[in-house]
Image 1: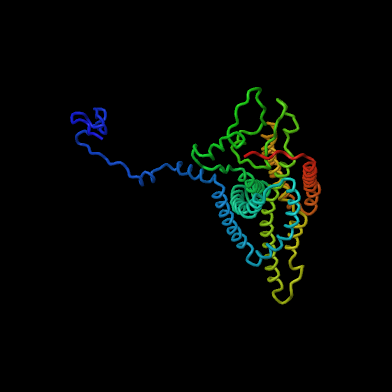
Image 2: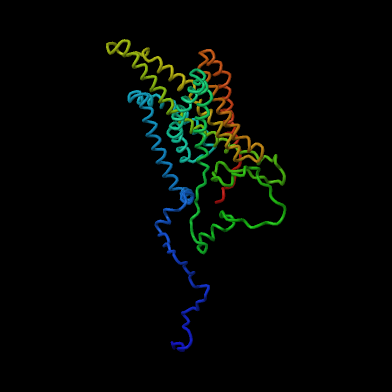
Length: 416
């Protein structure tokens, strides 16, 4: 290549104008050097880092690992808290006695899950959440709420409000949080550039991308809450499909039997884990008290008999034989309300179902706790007039969903 003439400027050089010149520094001032890259990263706003953490939690592997570590940590913590109140021997006895009603309750829920078809990983998560995380939060929060109410309302009134109002509200919120955690969005699409084939496939109609606009009348949509598109699409919480324009009372606008059964299963399994840990606490505490009373009265001279453990036997009969489905019954109402809210096509019902289910769970739980202070006659009256009809209604709903689902034709698979 030939060089340009000596009088012409080089093509690699550009002309500098007055606007490109750096501004003049006033006299008596000095230039402050710019921050380094490390300092810039340290000075980033907190919300930027939180946003990056939120984006990383969308990935299933990371979110599952964090959930497993959190549940394991809460499990160790709840074992330590229970052992402080019951002792090592009481903890082992309580865990052994609390295991006895568990297969019967889980077997009943497994039968209902044949209709709901909730994945095993979701049921295991709910069971672990109820047994570890929910009981840990509830045990600590119940103690703080009881101390606060006793300090401000007096001993008698504070204990009554704590047992009948604060404890049911705290426990039902802790158990119901498991269903909400399952609905958190999780990113499953691959992250790639627009010129790659995976991006073209993701943007294609029918593969999760935008569908082409179809001329004609607008197709009616289900009257779901505004938050529904931002939640994780679960196969057992599929929204209904409205076929006829303006048909808000179309049969497909109702929640399907599978969604109702899924709400019952998720709520009841969470409460089953919660009841297991709570039974271990109460049974271990009763055994420790009976053992201490026996040692104080007769010492080690006589062999122990069943009469020496009256409190343990009474607690076992009350919690394991008469009411093994008490906690599952309460939280199943919450799960049923959430299922109706996510899947119904009626706008008013979608707004009221979840709050009504939570209020019903808290109210029924409060009535059950209040029955313990009414004596034997009052307890049997509440048990026969409230608990048994409520449980029978829930059983009839489960049987109806099971029978209706067996006669219902299969729906097409959910598109990615």
